[in-house]
Amino acid sequence: MTGVVLLVAAVAGITLYGAIDDGPPAGDGPSVGLTVDWGGSEGQPSCAYDPVSRTVEARIRIDGTAPRAGQLTVTVTAYADENTSRPVGSGSRTVEVDGVVHRLLLITVPVTKPPHLGEDGETACARSVTY
Image 1 (cartoon, rainbow, N blue to C red):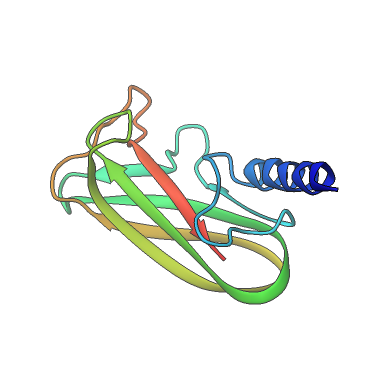
Image 2 (image 1 turned 90 degrees about the vertical axis):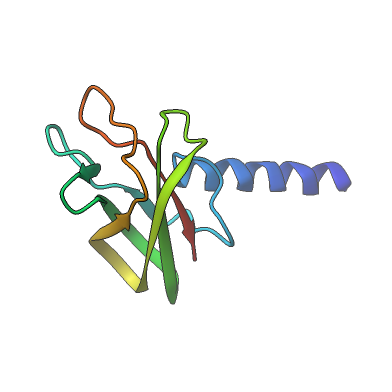
């Protein structure tokens, strides 16, 4: 019986891990029916640094069906290095989700110093989700 419980827990963990491609979600995390992903596209980075305002603007896309009404919080952290070990700023946004969700969020992250910029113009950022 213990083996079955462990197998079910492992499958559930892998399924949740697949719903967010940056690793296991923070807190309860979103259900498999609700995905949170970067919202950029070719030539339009998901996480872009503006040196004039000293902020990073992150585009986050939420799609799917919320299994229950609730609040979903997305936190974006900008980093000074591509290994995401030296944070330079963080910002969050909380939205209500219920039923079918197709939403693009813009999250502004004030930074204390310039974040790492990749060759493609993408800023070194990571996201976490609490649902």
